[in-house]
Every structure is written in structure tokens, then in C-alpha cells.
Image (tube, rainbow, N blue to C red; front, side):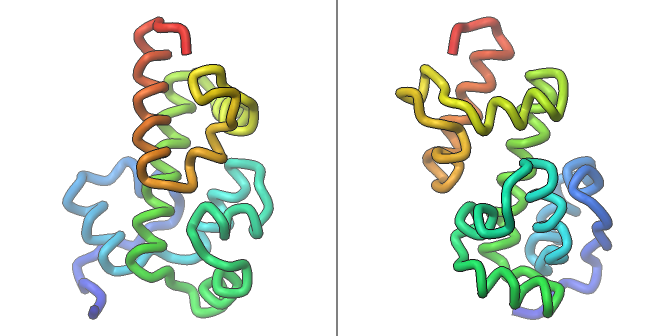
Length: 141
């Protein structure tokens, strides 16, 4: 797949999340910059090996992506989804620190699993979005 020449240059994850949907689609389709993976690991306060697992990559493959500078489509989609969930959690929980705490600690609604454990699958990401929606509306989760 060739890169879309009209894809916007993305400097950080907040900029990516603030783009109009069409521009987000173009950016993800073109392949996100691999440096955004480092930023997400920093935001989530996880190791690069942990992030590789969240992106469904082995650590060496993630290292190669960092060296080449661009993520492939499926990796870009995962990075976008994880960063979107992080910023959603920060919004609902009212700070990035609270979002990190939420991601790393057991949640009753998940059978005492951590949100990071659930974030490894698309189904898990959807459930985490649902839980954040319930928290936002004052439903115990």
C-alpha cells in the first residue's frame, strides 16, 4: 500500500487525536510515525516491551519499526486505538495521572483484571470504552 501524500504530518498523539476524522484516517492509512509508539509508552508508563505486546508485535519488530521510522497499517490502527482510549480515560478521570492509575490497577467491572490486560484485544478495547462511559455517567464500575 502506498502512502497517501495528503496525510498530515503528526508530531504527537494529542495532535493526532485532535485531527478531524478524515485526517486521522489518512494519517493511520499512511502509517504513523514510530516515534509515537515511544510517546504512548511514556504516557502509559510502560516499557517498550509491554507496548510491543499491546501493539501485537514482538519487541524486536517494534525496535525495527523505530529504526525505519514508520508503523504498518495494523500497528498504526492499534496505536491510534490505544492513544484514543488513553485520552478518553484522561478526560473521564480528569487527568493523565488518573488515567495511568486506572490502566494499571485492577477494576471490579473486569473481574479484577487491569485495563492494560484488556487493551490487548479489540473486544477488550470496546469493553474499556463502555466502562469509561459508565464512569462518566456515574455508574459504579
